[in-house]
Amino acid sequence: MMQIESLGTQEGIVAAAHSRLYRLLADGILFPDRDAFDEIKAGRVRDYVVETCRELPYALEPAFDGLVASGEYVDFQSEFLRVFEVGQGMPPCPLYSGIYRGGRKAVMEELARFYSYFGLSIEHGSGELPDHLATELEFMHFLAFKELTALHQEKDPMPYRRAQADFLERQLVSWVPSLEKRLQGAAPPPFYTALVWLTNALAREHLALLNGSVDRNATISLDAV
View (tube, helix red, strand yellow):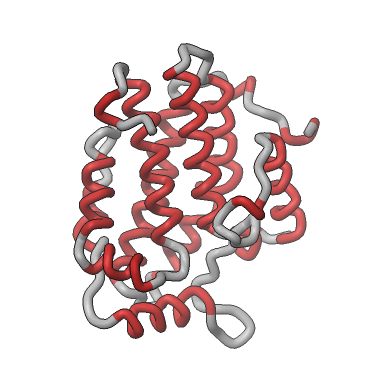
């Protein structure tokens, strides 16, 4: 596996950092097992995030202090369920983009086309539905890694950058702010407040960075897929 510190160019370092950070966020927003909780409580997840963000050309520090947990695993697990999974008709803060964007069936179909275009299937991901936040973050992890691979092999990274810009604009940037707003009234554990803040900030900053380097007129058209 290519390590960030071993990459020779700044472009490669930034692509690797994006890929790793999206992976960390995807793992963090899944239902926490005991090992994940132990990593969060020990501060290792926060440390991984801090180390990765040092390689990005923009600052995301405000979220770092909250990326830890305290108390017992069973309480942390219960809070995840209360905030994201359980509720009368709907949990306080569902993690599915189709609920926020409206027309969930159409959203799911659009996402399936995105994933299929790059040869991916949901069965090989986190096991969540196409519009789950973790699935969308996993896809960004994949696209950033494909950009990194293209750079490493001295190939054109632009198709993967355009795909990232298109996906961020159509998907994450369009609904994660609404998730963050709902969290404010749900009193979640600080870890999840920080994680969603970081996801929202990363999506905005990464899209701005990509828009400064790619031709948006050449963005992938899913209508033709």
